[in-house]
Image (cartoon, rainbow, N blue to C red; front, side, top):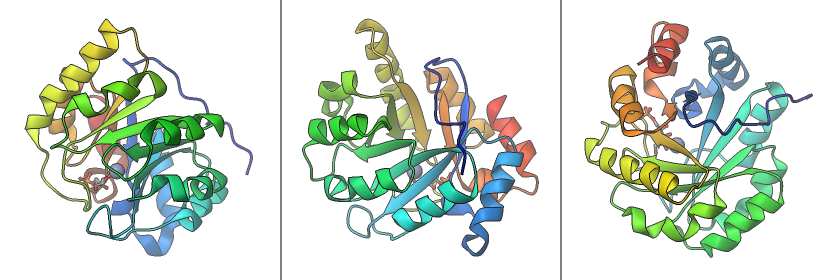
Length: 228
Ligand code: DX5
Ligand code: ZN
């Protein structure tokens, strides 16, 4: 499919809303992604889980490729897998626009980030709520996006963890002090109320599963998160 959405602006005041496919109806993936696009989604967030790094199994490269081929939207692929280095090439080939790997996973982080960049994808790095910001600091000059998990990853529908707000503030401060360039994304328990707290802390990319796909009016839900 002809693609026009593969460029992301590096303006960290721009709010980006990324509904998570995990909360969609899996029997109608094409229609669900179209519904998100019509509701005003900027990116589609795709949660890949291997049953190892997290205690759940979701989907792999075939579904990423299906979304890529059936809709035109920026694909924000979140790899919650133990060996991102081993599977990376398949997610690149599937049509990912941005690939986020976890700093806690079992790989040479700098090398994986370098390979994502070399493949022409945007580069994301994620950290769990319990992981300190110091764990990602050596890699911040390699990335386009830092994903601060606001739940323990694995499942949709969990409650937002407000203790992560401090880490978001720290990530923004480091970006300013060191003149670096990355979006700060939050993921887990995001709705209009928690999004407002995350914007205030300096995050600009909101991943939202349950609060968008399961809302009675998805467009209203996306707008509410954007204007929170
Ligand atoms: C959690 C996933 C999230 C999840 C968010 O492990 O990384 O992207 O889909 O779901 P909600 O928005 O329902 O918390
Ligand atoms: Zn996610």
